[in-house]
Image 1: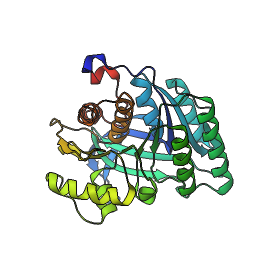
Image 2: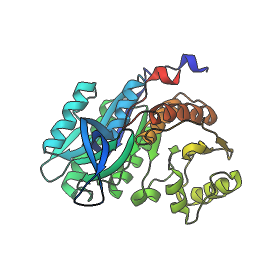
Image 3: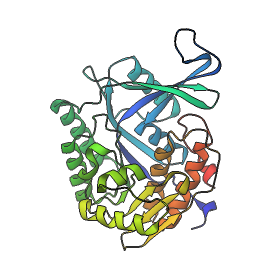
Image 4: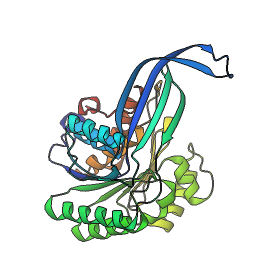
Length: 319
């Protein structure tokens, strides 16, 4: 199917994972502080954006799909801000659970023009408590029972929503309901994601999981690592994002190839992984070949990397 006919409007996607607020302070550095050898950023503007799995939901919405977002946040000011931003953007928030004993993650980034100077995080990254986990599982089962879900995206940022038991329950019920699962993993639960239809780590996560450094320019090194990882977690299809080098794919039938990325001047790479998993999941539902899926994902990632801050990709940018 050619690019100009891309249409994801009939796809329902359940996104499960850690959501957060990305807060930006934009300014300019003209001097060094007299108090310490650090730059003084003169703030000119401020902006808040939904981040993590919430950014995946925004990407899916912009691409024309219907997102269902399941997560848990705090009953705090940051959580209220996040809920309001999502509602304003058109993302349903009725499956985002708020709990007084959780802290909503807030990532603050300070920029000097388009260069990030510093980032600081305020969060509670411990696993949710057993009672909170039970609420998440109950809500998950309700969504699967009541909605026609075409694919599940698990967006793991190691912020505590995705416990090992919750992951097992998601995979168990997805298998029973014959719903494909795409995963953007992080280190803590990496090998708990077993027999995943579309598994998308980045190069660092991939290398750490198999225990040795992968040469991103060598198809032999990448393939050897993929075969080792498949023995550990039995993935069906693998996409490893290689940054400026593109995406490495290892398919269900054993094909392996690198889809190179077009060279660009990146302003900010934050959020690129969210865009990649969003595009890949939608194209996977529509049964595009893995090479084309990676080409679409590369194009989407390039579009968002040209912009400062976490930004979703629009369907017209793929076309």
